Amino acid sequence: MPDLRIAGDDDRLMIHADGEVLAEYVFRPDHPTFESPRPYFSPIRTLGGETVSLYRPHDHVWHKGIAWSLPVVGDENFWGGPTFVRGEGYVQLPNNGEQRHVAFESGETDAAAGGTSTDGIARMRERLDWVTQAGETILAEERTLAASVLTDDAWLLGFATALTNTSGRAIPIGSPTTRGRENAGYGGLFWRGPRSFTGGQVLAPGVAGGDELRGTRAPWMGFTGSHDETGTASTVVMVDDPGNLQHPTQWFARSEEFACLCPAPFFSDERVIEPGATMTLRYGVVIADGASGPERAAELAAHAGERLPTLLGPATATVADEGPVGVPATPEVARTRVGP
Picture 1 (cartoon, rainbow, N blue to C red):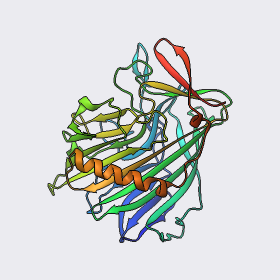
Picture 2 (tube, rainbow, N blue to C red; picture 1 turned 90 degrees about the vertical axis):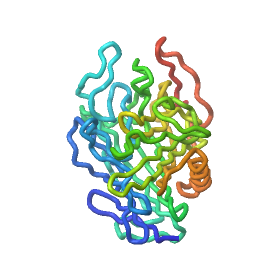
Picture 3 (cartoon, rainbow, N blue to C red; picture 1 turned 45 degrees about the vertical axis):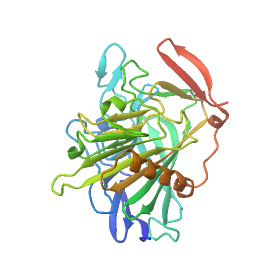
Picture 4 (cartoon, one colour; picture 1 turned 120 degrees about the vertical axis):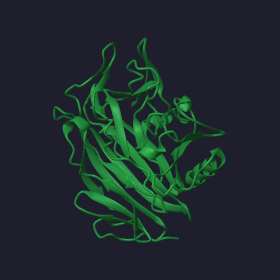
C-alpha cells in the first residue's frame, strides 16, 4: 500500500502517494469576484501520472478541476459567471459569492506537519464561510477531505460537506433548471475534464453514451477519455452516497462540448434549508488509469462505495434524515425543506 499523506502550504494541500503529488487542493484561491472564489482540486492525477482535470478553461473560467459549486443559493451565485434569470437568460449580476476558508481542524493526517497516515487514509476537516458579494455570511460549512489508494491503478478522493444556514432566513438551493432552463440542472461537486476528453464516453450502470445521459438518475456515473501526447486513457467515476438527498441523484454530464460530471441533487427540485438547519452530502471520486466500460466502472464504484464510510468517517445526522416535507413554491419550482 503506497504511503498516503497530505502536505500543506500557505494556500494549498498536496495529496501524496509514494512521493508523487496526486492532487492539489487550493483553499485560498486568488480569483476575481466574477469567478465566485472557492477552494478547488487541480491538478488531479492518476497513480500513473496522467492529469484528469482542467483549470480555468477559456470557455468557462470559473470551472476549476473539481469544486463544490452552487449556482442558485437563494438569489446568490456560488458557481461563478452570470446567473440564469427566468425570461432573460444569463445575466451578470452583483451576486457572485465566495467560499472563504476559515481553518483546518485536526485530522488523521496533520497537514501543517505533512504527517503520514497509518491506515492508508489521509483525512482533513475544514471550516468555511459562504459570503455573498454584498459581504453577508449566509452559510457555515464543515468539509471533510480524504484520500485512499483503492488498487494498483486507482485511488479514491472523498468529499463530505455539512452546510448550516446562519442567515436567519430560509435559503432555497436549486439550479438553472429549477429557475427555468431546461436540462441544465448543474450544481454540486463538479468535475471538468481535460480538453482531450471531449467526445469521450459517459458511463452509467449498464450503459455507455454521451450527452443523452444527462439528467439520468443513478448511484454513480463515470467518464473515460484519452490523453494527448501519450495516447493513454483514464477513467473518473463519481459515487453518490446512499444517505444523500435525492439518492440516487440526477447527474449533469457532458461529452460533446467538453467533458464534465456532476452529481446534482438540486437538478430538478429546490431544497430549502431552514434557519439553523444543516444539510449534509457525501461523495467519492475514483481516479483510475486505463479505459473503462460500464462493467469496470461499476466495479470501481462498488469498491469506492465499500471504502467511503471508512474514508469519510461516520455520517453526520441532520434533520434531513427524517425525510423532507414537500412544500409547493411556484408552479414552476418544486421545493422541499430541510429543518424543523
